[in-house]
Length: 372
Figure 1 (cartoon, rainbow, N blue to C red):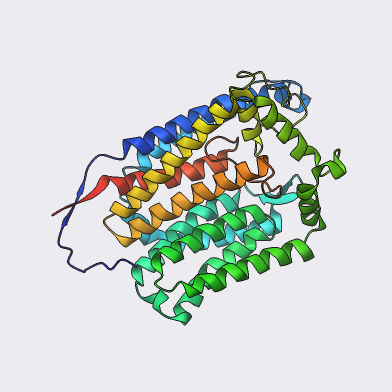
Figure 2: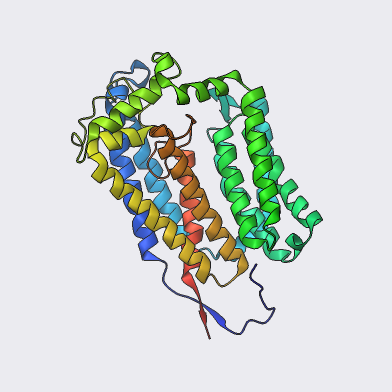
């Protein structure tokens, strides 16, 4: 864990933001707009509840992206240190929203995840990054002791448990992010060997003794052809899309699997449409953009002028990496099917704006540099 002197030997100056990171944000967001339209126009155009408006999701996604760019423009200029003053309030707001969604939340596809038009679990992801980073920065030696480590686990464990009750995939992402931040800040590796074992045991218990549908997903993952019209349907349709794309794809807008075969192809499974239309080459370019984004976040974390900045940038990098890995792994049936959006590309306002907020903060961290 990096130590900070009360009187640093350098001055902190504010300069230009990391334009490479900004480029990846803009590029992925614009690709998202194009792919949301390409993957949704058939479904929207044949949906009477949406007035057969083929541009329905496209228009909403444009609004989300423009709002996100506004957040980047404003948020990248707000000194990231200011968020330390709001940590307790951020934590309380996240906890209240997570409790309320269990009480009065609305269900989508059988899962209660929405309240007041937002998805609290998405808000809680960025909220926990800010809160945990602030707590560790203020108490630099708290992880030197077992009681201190357990206190940190209690702080993050309650909101993660509340999320996991209805959204296992997002709970796993939050656990990865918080675990990564603790790993960066902690001098004791043994904590994380135990923590990893407990996490695996916890997920196994949730799958085994929780909603039977989760066990059905495991079965479908192992043998999707055992129920081609049920639990294995989406897996197989996604794999058909990925496989039919070949090297260069069938062409933008020419996907066949999005014509009613892949359910809600503009959401979590959008990477399958990308593979079909743009091929392995197009999909690889998108993965490369994510890799560049994560690399720049890690570099910003290393160069940050404070522990607080280092932990925030690291947490955002882990959050992006974890979601990209899970989403692509689900589409390719590498791991059991679970719903998690592809950052900046999948349709959805709450997810997109949450990542925009995170990137705005990281861009502001990148503007601060040491002058000896």
